[in-house]
Length: 130
Image (cartoon, rainbow, N blue to C red; front, side, top):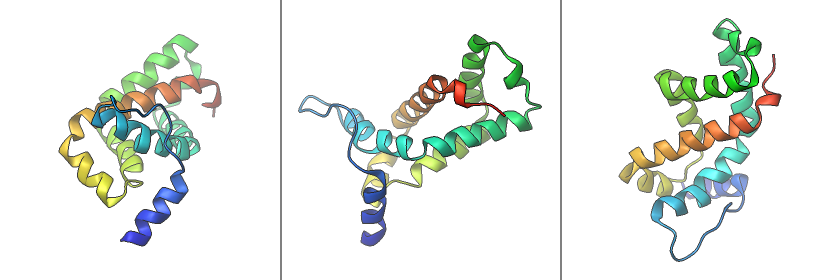
């Protein structure tokens, strides 16, 4: 398992964001683990969202920019299956140690994960086209 963890860490790269002594454990996890994974998986998240929108009759693509932002947020918050799929794409890149830490505070970290992903997709809405 050590080889897997090393490979995962090498793929993800360095921590992103500010890390200091006052950082909470959740903030540390966010910057050391979540941000690098979200960056690594970014292109895949965009394609997964496009596929989701197409399967939902493509209504997303006809919306105004403001309504697209609301759609992204609503879908990720309300469609449990879709949210769990996205969550799995993130958790798959945890090391065993990170997973052990994650399960201790998963509720708070899940909120952070999804909020970060929502903001990431919203900031790239122009890339989400058929």
